[in-house]
Image (cartoon, rainbow, N blue to C red; front, side, top):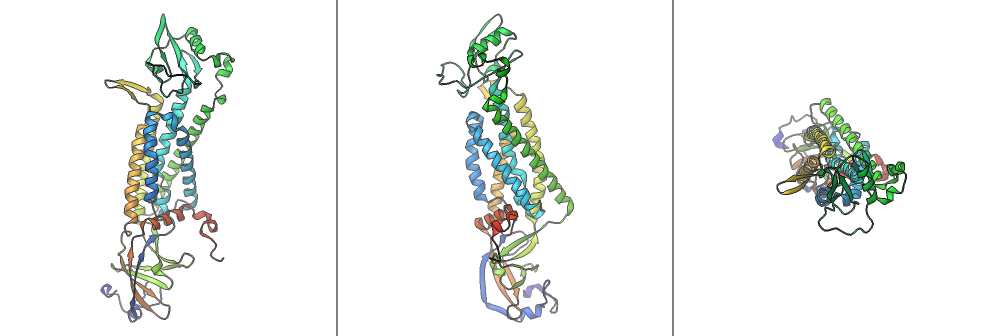
Length: 418
């Protein structure tokens, strides 16, 4: 504190203690080290959680590209869980700029692409156009594999297409229909119906009633979730822009340590910055407010990132709605009908979140030094020196979880009076 050269009679922060009074009683026998962790909503998604998401999502992404049908349920459940978490984050943080690390919607792109894929490919897998007629294609019951034919996932009943003036030799499925010419006319429809006798036995109106097919409920659920995700992205984007325009300065963020309590009034770091200490006896910590440089960076990153993600989602929408499922190349058939841009951008977002999560949990916030002098007044004005270290994974989990569930109040934090 001597290197700061404060005026002897100047007050320390908002206290009534002067620097002369504090320096007159230096507690040299009191030295300690502890963590400085972010308070409620001041932490990014903990890197351990990000690792779990990556470990789960990477295999799912591979399966979505190769055999998407078996991941439908997982994609829908995962997207629903993500939507619920983000709605909770929005309600809890109230879009405060200081808590952007909790409510940033930049990770939503992963589930946006997944729900898009489920919607379009379920619809395509269940409806095959023959001329100007629609044939509903159901899964076969114990249908054996036929050598030399393209089965896709094995879940779709194949039917014989008719080409005038003679039959096409290959039996086709929705997986290969777009690669073969299909004739117009009733003969093609009748031949297709003979391959699907279940529907030929029903009136035509019933054949075309989608609500009787469970697969269409998956498509509807996927569409609803996709719309919900886009709405959440747009809301988050608007709120991030508003936060940046509200003030050019970084938002104030609370960081806490048990070494600031129970009687700390102010803290002075090695760069002579003075911080008032706010005691939280219920948590057993004292907190200081510092400029949130990390939060300001993430506000800017959210605006740029979410805007790009929305563009990527439009690109994937066009790919899924207009691209043939397979495209022939010199190396064979390539699966084209996948949300490629959101797949790759989602992977990049997870990687960036992981890197920043590890960095934040192992570093002190910008502008704060590891050595501080705390001024207290338990038995008269006094000062002591402390050493602060990073919060680690535990501190990050506490800060992020407190921000996510802050609106639960006593249900989550407990009752201080009890």
